[in-house]
View 1 (cartoon, rainbow, N blue to C red):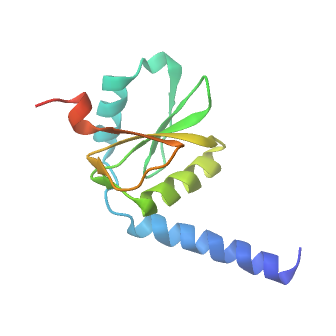
View 2 (cartoon, rainbow, N blue to C red; view 1 turned 90 degrees about the vertical axis):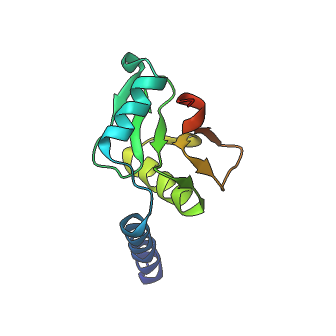
View 3 (cartoon, rainbow, N blue to C red; view 1 turned 30 degrees about the horizontal axis):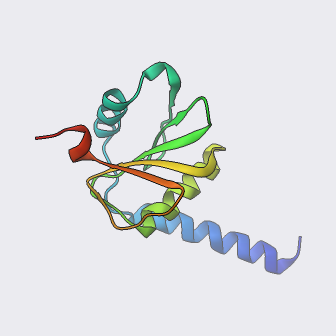
Length: 119
């Protein structure tokens, strides 16, 4: 492996680590559990621990389910992709549950908390 590739890989890992450390809106485990229990049949999920945004993976299509306690923005998208790769998940689709979202794309399915818990 060339020195440039090693440095680039190390830099990318450092950026990902910093991104995750400073990321606002990291949900408590209780919020992740509440979202999963409200929206999904638990037998089709594998709950994942040790991630900041990633709550579970959908067993059928191996994609991640993410929870953000606040607004889902570009930094959250980057963190979600990073966590998906670390968990060995497909990144062609992200299921996100958040209060609001200012970042979107074809692969991102955002559901606002107000849609699953009407007041």
